[in-house]
Image 1 (spheres, rainbow, N blue to C red):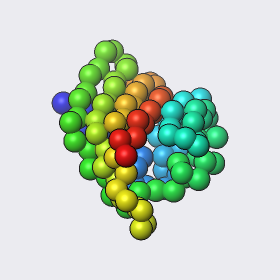
Image 2: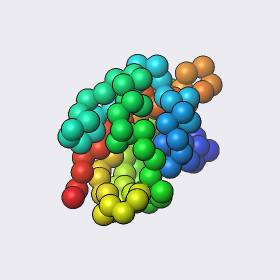
Image 3: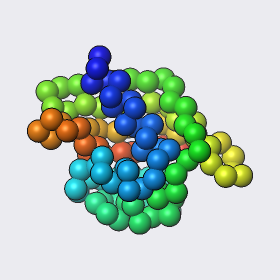
Image 4: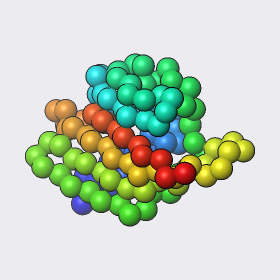
Length: 115
C-alpha cells in the first residue's frame, strides 16, 4: 500500500506543482496523450506545451484504481481540476509509472475530457 500512496501523491503533484517539479518526476522519453490541441507529446515537448506547463490550483481524483506488476504501476481515475476563471475540467485519466532503480518515474499519462 505504501507504493500506491506514494504514487497517488506524485500524481497530485503533477497537477498542482510547476513544470520543473513534474519534469523531475518524469521518465526522459515519457509520452503524454492530451486533449486537442496539445495531442500526443513526448519528452520535453510536454513541458513546453502551455496547457501542460500551466499548473492547476487544485485537483480531486475520484474513482481511483491502482495496479502493479513488478516495476510497473498504473493509476486510473476521474479528475476534477480547477485553475483560473475557467470551468472545472473533468477527465478520465491513466498514468503509468516505472520503478527505475528505486525511483518511481511517470512513463505515460493520458486524459479523456468529459466536458
